Image (cartoon, rainbow, N blue to C red; front, side, top):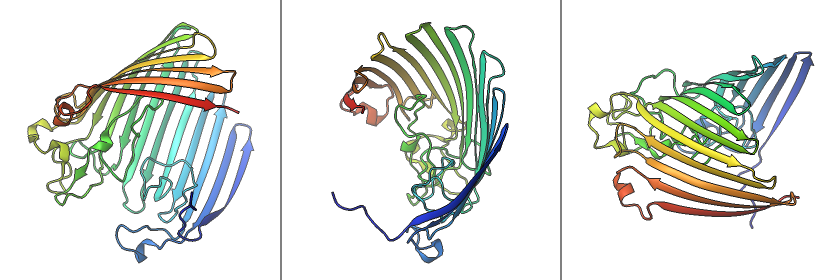
Length: 360
């Protein structure tokens, strides 16, 4: 294995401090990065930009009883290119890095109004100094323990990539400059293939989306036995995804919609997902999990985007608390009528995974 790529000296130097008194805690950090890249004014379009810049973050936490309010204010210079920095940052990226080219604030509340309920909410707003584009991400979730075996939850989430432009006429997905969830089996099972939608202008160049999305989730968790949990969940999403997306860019059309008539793309696109997850631990070392997920992207048509049924069973066994064997089987059905789906081989798709993990 050869040495890591090296483009010249780089690093960062900073100072931080903290203060706390009873219910209040305050932390401040200021950092200056250094690297061997040239600044934006000295390089051509598409070249890496840097040269070093400042970053600062202020975090305050107020705790009282079973309630907590956290406030974070942050600033990351456009030239702050520190690949080792992992502070709070919005989902947008600048040259592949989240903690860069951003000024914003987030306020978050978590608490238990009573023994049975739990509330989590936050509002995160920011602006990109290079593009002056303001973005927002808001989240609100409530859980209520009706009985020891029944826990319903309801939550809503809103994202806007550029608050200067709102409405269904602006795209949300397929943006090379702004990341959302990465396809995979995340904790909530909330997966969309928006990144597969490539929006281009008349010259075929990728265009930065400025749209918005709104999600509603309803979940019911049943615990009929201390070793068994059954969780059905449903989600409805409204997302900007029109045929003619940005009036400022004539001919701006997502490639998968080139044959769609304008009257078919006059409102927010509606996506639906439903899950049923069953998990059990018959004995302490053995964990079994099964999930069925139905997905319909654009419920108005089955010829444009993915509609699928994903099933899997996951079995894991821990031997003497040090060695784990995991076996997983997936069965994936494509239900839509897109040409690519009709030509897909194999269909359905079978996936098999064996994992061995040692813990020392």
